[in-house]
Structure formats: C-alpha cells, structure tokens
Length: 149
Image (cartoon, rainbow, N blue to C red; front, side, top):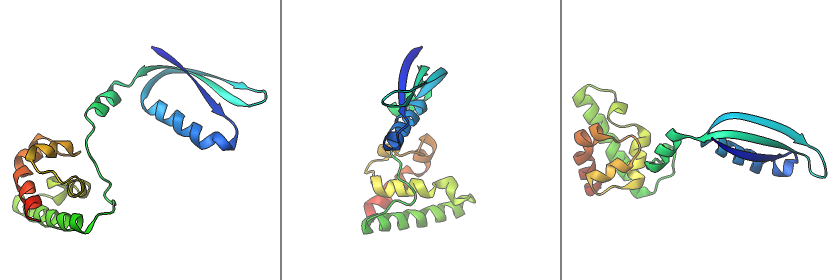
C-alpha cells in the first residue's frame, strides 16, 4: 500500500487544475482509504491523505492501449472517402451474414480505421475493437478497401 498527500486549494483560481489532478489520480489508483483535514492560514486548502494500490486493470490497459478515434472526429476528404467505402462494405457484409452492421464494425471503429490507415492486417490489432475474430473474418477485406481508395 502506498500513501499520497493531495493538496486541494479552495481558491477558484486553482479549482480546475486541482480537480483534474485529483480525478486523474483517483482514476489511475485503487483507493483503500482516505483522511482529510481543512488547513486554514494564508492559503486555505484541503489536505487529503490517500492510501492506495496501483490500479492493476488500468496499468494493463495502458500497456496495451489501442488507437481509437471519436465517432465525430473531423476527417479529411481522403478519410471521408475511406469511411464511405468502409460503411458500404460493412452494410453489404451485414446483409450477407444477416447481422446488424455494428456486429461487423461500429462507426467508431470505422472512423478509427479511416484515421489510422493500417497497411497490414496485423496493424488492425492496434485499433480498439479489433480482436482476433474481426481480424480473421474481415481483416483482408478491410486492407483491400484501404488499398483501393
């Protein structure tokens, strides 16, 4: 178990920065317990003693972080062409397999492909949402689309 002392200043000038720091810290660690105290003086602030463990799940995710673009990410004209081609392919594939289109690939995954532009099937592993199944079933076709657009 580790201990971290956080200083949370009461002045509005520091509120956004301190809140971001605390939120990032709490998101990346498993809190065991906390103790806090208000410190009054020339600068008023909360002193928070946090007893924590490293968040194992978060550390695992950060080691294997994958590329992911937001579904509403702004795309260049070339990326829009890629995205349109991928959507057309996905819809045809979904009809063939009698599946909802998002089972083939979500909009976010297609946008990520259009932004990331993998050139090899193996590079699809770097995109969030693409595991062994999707790569085996659709990887070659996706790379072919990227090569032709």
